[in-house]
Length: 386
Image 1 (tube, rainbow, N blue to C red):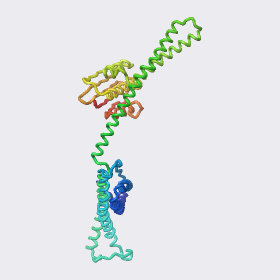
Image 2 (image 1 turned 180 degrees about the vertical axis):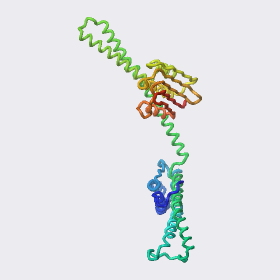
Image 3 (image 1 turned 30 degrees about the vertical axis):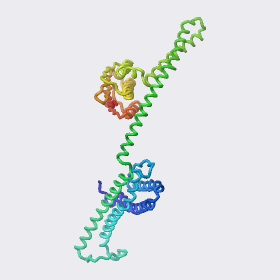
Image 4 (image 1 turned 90 degrees about the vertical axis):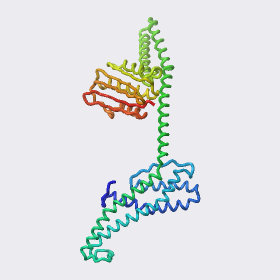
């Protein structure tokens, strides 16, 4: 704990926190006792009282105490902890206010006692002879000591009050653990649902729009080959429509493959990544060592990691070769992508790597990027298998 200086803003904020805490604590503690015989009213009032105390900690200590969810019953542990704080607060605040007031008051009296009597308003009266240099020295030492002690006491009592408040007004460790577990399960459900939706869209496009485009392209090709006696404008229109249909079909296939390749579900990462490596405009050495498949979500993240990395290499790296390694070690999946390009890749340099990092973070994975200027570039990704 850093000791504040007597003249610092921190010392005065701590002092104000402690001194204001006493009347606030007495008021809220008294209201809690008054409302105790009426549980429904007390249940509604306790969150209001807690909000007042949270505001005090936020204003003077810049400390945020996490709120607890409104309990369904006034007999819940969270409600009882809040009631306990409001009943305990007057005693903690009284001790703090007394000690801090004595320290500051003693410091002021000790340091002002040596002023001439005509300067003192009203004059201070002592049972000691202030003309004695030994008495003067003692008073001086005590005054300086209390001046240095006062901010320490204020800081300590404010920290004690904050510790008690965090324990009783905030969520307990068991509640935080349950909340974290619930959020983790919810996040996993959202990720799985999004991945399942991508697979559904891929199937719908593959079985619907893609098949219609294939049929259209075939019919236009048939017309282009057989209707040779048409006028030149009509024949050119058919040829142009045929080329447009083939281009649209290619773009749709690329889009469907980017959503979620069917081969990933059917044959796993090895086959899916082999297709990605084969389509790269530079040689890619691929090594996949996975004895047992992971969950579909983790497979999808690993696939998109390699796919996005190779796309970035093709666009920006000017590389002559790349290497991709995927291996599973117990409950972790390790992905490494290496290229001999010009380097200089940065997480904040574009949306590709940043979006990839966000997708990896969503499944509690980690991404490490090494890309000095001049190359080479290495992307290492570590993913949980379950």
